[in-house]
Amino acid sequence: MENRKYLFTSESVGEGHPDKLCDQVSDAILDACLTDDPESRVACETFTTTGLVLVGGEITTKTYVDVQGVARGVAKKIGYTKPEYGLDCDSMAVLNTLHSQSPDISQGVTAGQSLFKEQGAGDQGMMFGYACKETPELMPAPIILAHKLLLRATSLRKEGKITWLRPDSKSQVTVAYEGQVPKHIDTVVISHQHDDDVSRQELEDEIIRQIIVPVLEPTGLYSKETRIFINPTGRFVIGGPHGDSGLTGRKIIVDTYGGMGRHGGGAFSGKDPSKVDRSAAYMARYVAKNIIAAGLCERCEVQLAYAIGVPFPVSVMVDTFGGGIVPEEKIEAALPKVFDLSPRGIIDTLELKKPIYQATASYGHFGRSEFSWEKTDKKDQILKEL
Image 1 (cartoon, rainbow, N blue to C red):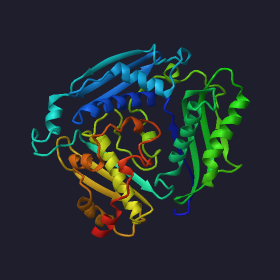
Image 2 (cartoon, rainbow, N blue to C red):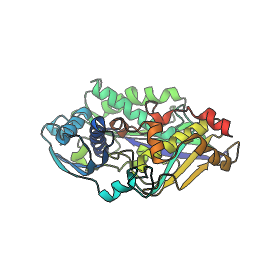
Image 3 (cartoon, helix red, strand yellow):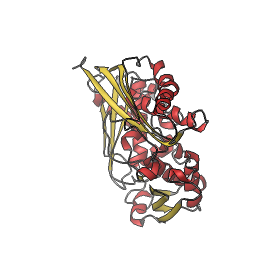
Image 4 (cartoon, rainbow, N blue to C red):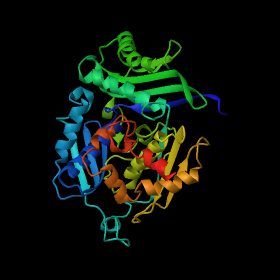
């Protein structure tokens, strides 16, 4: 099994994808709340279709949020600025159906109001974090490469270097492995929305020349044998919310590890950090990444689980996939001495009350150095405890 040859595929979607538009609106509203009231409680969902953005959910905050302005600003930043796109930031309808949070939930989460003295988890559930040595970001290669392709495409579109690209896009990267080692990029798929007047030949040539080759060639995994499929339906003019409706929280595998490792099922965007669906998933990644950085294994998965209102995890699990240099039980025993895994401890450690969330809502929540949960500053402490 160690040297088994196999293919693994991950996908990404660009910031103009309708689901990602919704994630960004939900997180932009969260950021607007946290900017003036760091204690805001937010559970914001967004739906979009042709000419419409609908915002709903539960928010308790001391500040005022201009939902209309936030939604239109997000659409404009992405590039939905023309009526022919089917969603135009200036003319689209924005419906606001937000209301306040249930006092029953608030009671269980607020320190001093619950059965416990400390802040409890905002919900029950399990969260997973994953890290591996495949890439400098300690991320699986297929998902990080899929993100980078669309980041490059977005940059070229917004800089006006490829003028016929429209906002909606998807990518997919298939990597050939031997054991746990990436050996070759087998297949690349890019589906990118475009203007009606560009020829298929120009579209293929420019996407290969300006996007695929600059991103993938430096990895050493890309070659002439790599199969490439660009807009395989033959045409992608109608896209975004006009081509497909969008909803917050519908791209949870794109947001995490591309299917490598397990997922607890909870979405991230639109949720303030009292919701452990989000904050504990960030903490699990932080823990897993530091275990890898400490040299304890090649791959690591961490599971945390919580009960609503309870101020500590009900379980902590470490999986090194049989490759750890010390028993997993010893690592698990060391973790509470290094990391504060309580909901309050997670928020304080990772500084999660700051308005940082809109940036997370496209191109993945992990593998990006600007986020606090990507630090590897606890590796020495882990080794000391062991």
